[in-house]
Image (cartoon, rainbow, N blue to C red):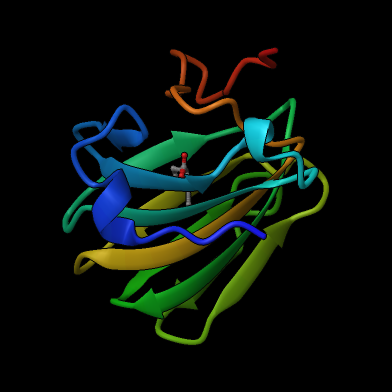
Length: 127
Ligand code: 9YT
């Protein structure tokens, strides 16, 4: 069994802070669960282009308000506490935060820990 506290992650190498989001990487590839689990804060007022070509991601909002735009269709869905979206087709999207948005994110395959988006909004596959 694995038990962790958010306080163990904050300030560690698995606390990844970028201009648009901060991601506390709670479970990673090395934990051998087949997925990674993150608590991510999307920063108020930001717009982020994301295209996870190499990963599937499910995202559950636990706090805050914003929206997601699916680029293929132009559809825009509001996000608030209780909203789930899953990128089951590697969907290219924009994520916009009206307030700080706290999201619980699951990635398959799992992230190693230190990934940040490249210039194409993609995480590389890492061992
Ligand atoms: C929701 C989302 O994709 N945010 C970008 C950061 C990512 N979730 C992460 O690395 O935790």
